Amino acid sequence: MRICVFGAGAVGGHFAVKLARAGHEVSVVARGEHLQAMRAKGLVLQAGDEELSAYVRASESAAELGRQDVVLVTLKATSLGGMPGALIPLLGAETSVVFAQNGIPWWYGIDAPQAPVAAPDLAWMDPGGELASLRARVLGGVIYSANEVVAPGVVRNNSPGGNRLIVGELDDQRTLRVAELRRVLEGAGLVSPDVPSIREAVWGKLVMNMTSSVLSAVADTSAGELRLGDPAFEALYQRLHLEAAAIACAHCPGFEQPLPMKARVGHTPSILQDYRRRRPMEVDALVTAPLAFARAASVSTPTLDILGALLTEKATRAGLHRPARTLPV
Image (cartoon, rainbow, N blue to C red):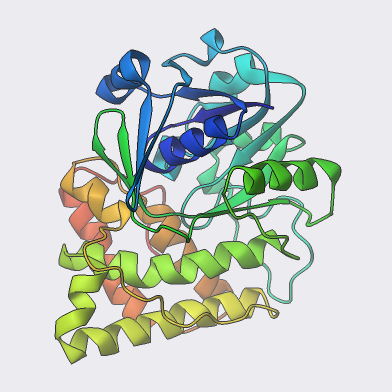
């Protein structure tokens, strides 16, 4: 299968190595020193005691890569502006495009099955409807995989044995293209379970992001380090987790509330990596949009309100966030 990973940073680089080593024709869109390293000596994945390498076709321009069977977009939500135009050179008649970002995705409201509580208007996440113009090609994606670029061309995976990419149609229909993509992912050692609802999968991941990632970013330390010492932080974590789960349950009645994630000592959530490296932070997807869902369902979120305001202020003052809309009151 011809697969392009658009945004082959930490997560995308990990997936590119696994897919290439499984025998697929993998290309990547990347930039900077990371791109130059991949061109010169390939891409390296450090996973536990293993070091895996793969040569992939790498470019800053999709126009050099040709038509694909699948495009896996692993860019942050903050980098999706102009995507339809950038993707055109990769799109054949049957090309599917998987969007897999943290937080509430721009596609959440498209072709969504009826829910007991109406979702808030998310048009502000896709100004002008540019991304929605791709709707017939779009598959939803949810990634569970903790990674970090530790050197140009080198990605370290911090979740050995726990790497998943859940994919699904936006209307939750079972289709051949989803089944085939799941088969490809499983064959590459990337777990891709069949799920009844792609939005429930979004909330399953988001409940974790809205707890450990938000709290870690506000305190500027890893989730594991936060929870190891002070019982007060543990209590704060639990309150935040319960509020996030309450929002999920309100919008997805079949949602099974996950237990709090076991902390990975030393792992730094991606939003905190972005803060430390002075890159745009995914505040809207992880805080602003979930709070809009809370208001739509009349769910009280006092802990997330406070931490969300603190994170928004911190990111904005650092010049790493330009709010697409203000936090709901």
